[in-house]
Amino acid sequence: MPAIGITGGISTGKSTFVECLRELFPAATFFDADAAAHALLNRPEVQKQIRREFGAQVFSTAGDLNRTKLRAIVFADATKKRALERILHPRIRRQWRTEAKGHRSSPNFFFADIPLLYETGGETFCDRVVVVACSQKLQLAHLRKRMSVKSAEAKQMINSQMPLEEKIRRADHVVWNNGDRTSLVEQARFLVALWQRQRRTKK
Image: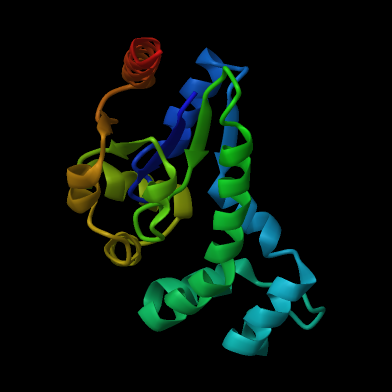
């Protein structure tokens, strides 16, 4: 089965779409870049690099990483954002590329949920890319609710990423999340049926 990359903008509904895929195809393999990044931030060698780049200000007196403070810094400063990406992204890319490569002979789907897929050149490792999108108004509302931030901060987070319009232009498939969850399930069913037909045709 092909490796399917799933991306989009912050708070456009990627995670909900992936949940739909998990329910429809429990045998499929899923890679979650956000979960991988979260785990990496607990590694001593990664924290050592973060301390060197960002200083002690992003750590508590007990030595624990303050993720909220780190997030605020990288969203406000593009240079710091790139610095954190240089620490995390190569490790994440190696991890999911190895998993995708090992899954090539499997009869089940492999889905990689990677928010910064295009920003990191990860699309080159995918057979198909799905971009989950929604209106800017909905995106802003979802982000403010999810992160408990003000409108200005939410807009800053959105603007720090590649424009959603550019991701849509480059996508193989676009899933629209302007409706309810039922709509996402229907779109997931349609796409998987399409990929299954394409795979049968290639045989």
